[in-house]
Length: 276
Image 1 (tube, rainbow, N blue to C red):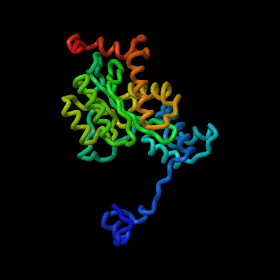
Image 2 (cartoon, rainbow, N blue to C red; image 1 turned 90 degrees about the horizontal axis):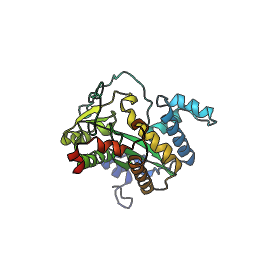
Image 3 (cartoon, rainbow, N blue to C red; image 1 turned 180 degrees about the vertical axis):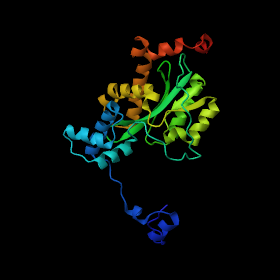
Image 4 (cartoon, rainbow, N blue to C red; image 1 turned 90 degrees about the vertical axis):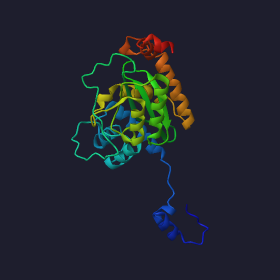
């Protein structure tokens, strides 16, 4: 990389590396406390109103007494990986390396464990900064089969979570995701193919297609994340891991008449699989 003590001028070193000369003198500033508070509030509003774009969120924040502009809200949403969810025409060409798969769960009754899994990524605020969380959810039982916390939005942590779930619980019939770049990446598509499952994707902007994961995010954030200001990434990993253990084993689920996801998941498996 750049060697400031080298006899070759910095300008020439930057040219050889294909870098902007201005970047040699740029020192990134940490996210301010005010922006971190805004990002947390935007995340809360996005959970309540997933259809709200930067203009509506700006107006909601102003009604709450925060003076902010649309562009600032849009910048923070991009940083958090948030996007307003609504139906809109898909007028862009699909990149050959990022295929979009059809939604396979429409009109399908999911009636047993491992018939369909769902994956999604969400933003997790901390005391300073943020991380991202991916979870593998069994559609029938709502049981979280695996999860990963990452400091970036790369596809690797999604692939790791899927591979762990497959290694521990076998291959599902369908793996459903949204159309995010992590799930349309070559690495993730290959992981699904190698597992023997079929890949399914929500319609663009159709958050209801993956509504069970959206409900999981709401539970995690209101019952764990928003109650704690994680100081470190390791603290976030520990806290989220402990909550998901509680969620699977002890938290009654309204959709299952008060039974836990663990009970519903394992009771729906063939006896041979449970014994194994």
